[in-house]
Amino acid sequence: MRRIVLLCLVTSTLLISGIATAQNISDLPAKHWARTSVLEMVKFGVISLHGAKFDGTTKVTRSELAISLAKMAKLLEAGNWPKEVKSLGEATEGTSEPSGSVTRYELASVLDRAGRFYMHGRPNAGSKRYGNSDALMPPIKITTIKTTDPAFASVEYMNQNHMLAPNSILLHADSQLVSPMDVAKCTAIMIAGVIDRLTVEPEDKPVISKPPKR
Figure: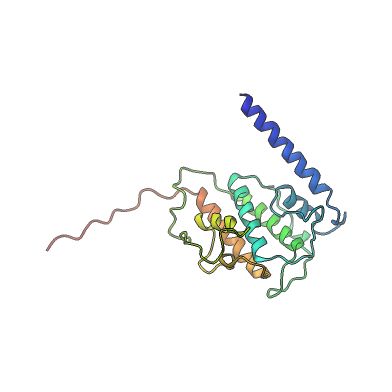
């Protein structure tokens, strides 16, 4: 009982601390179009601060995208994400072209909205044997990222849980900048993997008998 109480106190303290940190971002204007999303992403630890700054106009790299998506995947699987869907009238004011690069402001906005839409259709966790879907990419041996790389653990988590496409740019997580299309594809596949982990596979598959002996 004491351990449960202690855990609750620690969790509450961390959450309050996270909110306080998010509210005190030194370079986030009070009326910035992405402010709400930035505060949410920082509070949940999906996108990290650079000291006391968010550096919202900084371009997102493959490495940062991989780390953020892995953190987001764990939160979505646990159901720890806001459910209120923002209206399309509050469209982001980012200026990235499909072939351009994405800023941290834009990444925060996209992940915030994608997670909210996911939560509205989130399946209830069943008794599924995790990772047995034939529709998503099976785990592979990652040889393109060193195990000492800060992004390796994140990429490996998504790899083991069917959250990467076979040709995903995240298998080459580095300092290369990502495009809006990269973010869209990687986020969609990650969410598909989360849904797969929470969806019970049918266990009454027809048994194919052996052909008769001749």
